[in-house]
View (cartoon, rainbow, N blue to C red):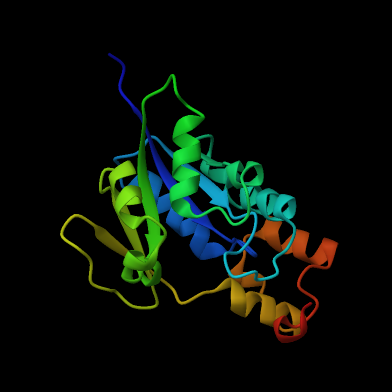
Length: 198
């Protein structure tokens, strides 16, 4: 019997992807316990937040993590699912797309989302689908974690602040990987301040 394909599933808006997103993908792969990291950009936001085009965000994420090699990749499955696709729906769909392969999913979550997990759609089912395998990522400060989980703290960096800086014409080059910076500048992304974006 062959061993399962162990993947770390890392979802988010990635609007835009920044240095901390790359750090999370690197950590998830390097810490061991998974064979690949699949990054799943959201097609639409659960609360209707306006985002850069899905294809553009997928392209930026792929460019941002290209140096990590073939074991870290973008999985654009949410582009094939209804909007919004909640995490439980995405995991169900991923498993359904690999019926002939034993896939073991580890969920990568932000500490803020983990703290609100009981409010997520079908959390109990989602936790069962991933067998309780959850990696919790904190930002800014080290945060507490459950006995079956671990926490990796990151610098306090956010896509919201990057979008604000772009619209305000303030420097942000150190916050994003070089290919992401090039895409933002070449395609004129995030030029409208978030508070007035349609």
